[in-house]
Structures are given as structure tokens and as C-alpha cells.
Length: 77
Picture 1 (cartoon, rainbow, N blue to C red):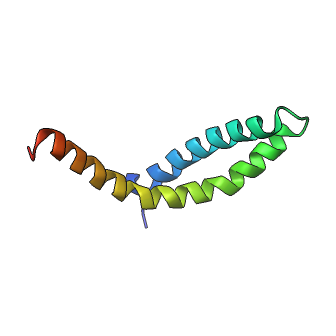
Picture 2: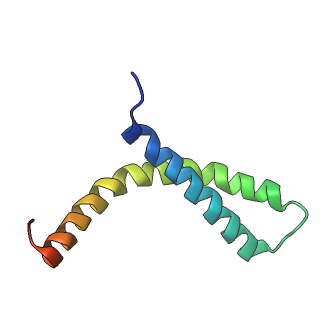
């Protein structure tokens, strides 16, 4: 099977978001201990697959919600 943008884009987006969020939350919870990078990477490795699955589930909901909001604001144009 050849990958299409709609298959890869949520995984990349989730990876970027998981990387940033786990870094910030790890820093907020622990400060900057000597093993910060190891702890951050562990949190990231756990979070990325979960974030990817969530992205696949959330994208259709977000698209439908966006269409409904825009239709309510501007009509069905």
C-alpha cells in the first residue's frame, strides 16, 4: 500500500505536538534534573502513538465541527 498524505500527516502532526507537550510538561513537573532528556524521551515515546491514534479519531470530528460552525456563521455557501 502506498502512503497518502492523509495517512502520514496526522502521525507527523501528532509527533510534533507530543514532542513539544511532553517536553513542557516534563519540565513543569521535574524542573531540569540531570536525567531530563531521558525522562522526556520516555514520555515522548509513550505519548506519540497515543497522540497519533487520537489524531485519527479527532480529525473527522474537528472537520465536521468546523463545517457546522462556519455554516452557522456564514450560511451554507
